[in-house]
Image 1 (cartoon, rainbow, N blue to C red):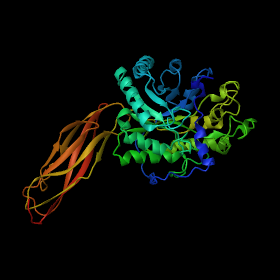
Image 2 (tube, rainbow, N blue to C red):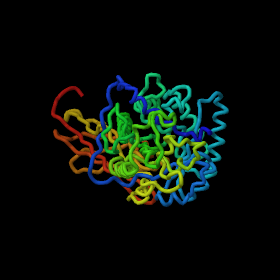
Image 3 (cartoon, helix red, strand yellow):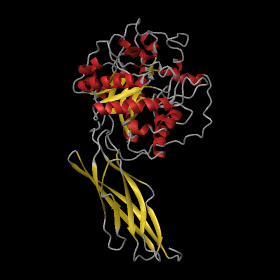
Image 4 (tube, rainbow, N blue to C red):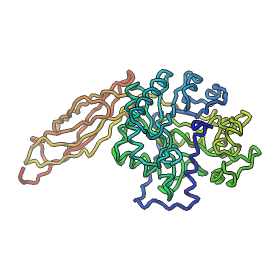
Amino acid sequence: MSRRLRILARFALALCLLAGVAASPLSPISRTVAQSGALPAAHLGYGVHIGPHTNVNPALVDQLGMDWVKVYEPGQIADFPGKRVLFRMDLSWPGNWTDFRNDVTRRANELSAFGVDAIEVHNEPNLSMEWSKGPNAWEYTQMLRVVYTQIKAVNPSIIVVSGGLAPTLTTADRGAVSDIDFAVEMLDNGAAQWFDAFGYHPYGYNQPPETEPAYDTLVFRRVELIRQLFEERGIYDKQIWLTEFGWLRDPAEDGVQCSDSDPNFAGFAWLRVSGQTQADYTVRAYQWADEHWPWAGPMFLWNLNWALYPPETNALCSHMRWFSLLRADGSPTVTFQRVASMPRRVSDYAPSLGVHAQEMTGEASMFCPISLRVGSFEVINAGYPGTRFTAEVQAVASPTGPPIEVYPPAVQSGETVEVYANTTGLGPGQYLVYINVTASINGDLVSQMVQGSVVINDVQGPC
């Protein structure tokens, strides 16, 4: 079987739990607690993995209500007209960088001609089974930089997604490296400038999707810890795409007895849930992401059709088969039926105006009138990646507060605005500052308000 058909032995990554791997000695990552309240704007896409060479009926994607597919071979793309397409580009560490660049350029041109929407750069590089040199976040980031540059040179509108990280703990032999630690190293090596969206695989293992995350546990909400890493580094304008997720259905429901003694199922027995539980957890996972993760983009359910491969291609106890939404005879599982009928709010796939303010409070003495730096804020695209927009920035005039100046008065998304106040003539007190940020996005005028303050004290001293 080719590498593209073998695709996912990734759950060996979870075996570290069975081996009793201890938590990392690094400081624990504090938990991101999802807040309840009003629903965010629709931000999710709904997708499913399609394995090649099974003659699966493309109409099933419509029945599932999916607007995305994730595919592995260019020839699959034409089977899904009208769908958005994420293509997984499998790669390996280059022996010759010139040849590597040329190959990526050739493949990007081919995919662009097919109309692909997004390319995921490799798969689970934090596992040795996918990164044969041994997982190395610095190496992966260097490769990502080159691939991003080549793809954008071919077609700037293609969304580049970093290779989805496997949720795992670090094993003693470093055959698996913690997704949290790997993401830290990627971000600290500047990876954020080389992807439009961050790929992640928030599998649920055998836990409900609402289970609270922690550094040393593997649950669906573990992606919240990844998001926290972004926020700690001031990265607010990158969506996280959930490029694989799901739960493993018990093979015994179809009369197939699988256990850890079978090499194709070794280490997976503990992940089994009933078909009904798989369905419940899957629908609830979509709901949780919709309600609590405004920074999440498309979600790709693993998988539609791996159960259709014959046993000589994909063994009966292969774990990949039991994530499938179809049974071996092509009939739909309960999960297929539940996903097809679940409510959903689909993203409009447009950029979204957002602002992120740093400290926006300046202080000065009434005896030393100055042009005071109040602070700065970044204008960000908080929505679908890949498109930049221009925003106008204007201070709101106040009859009693200080005159405010902003630099520059017009910015592109991703740029920073500096805010200054003239404190001449101000008496002691606190003065509020307001700045309007306005942009035209897809013909709609949208705006955000930024608030700061200027504090004037009556302390005398040298100016």
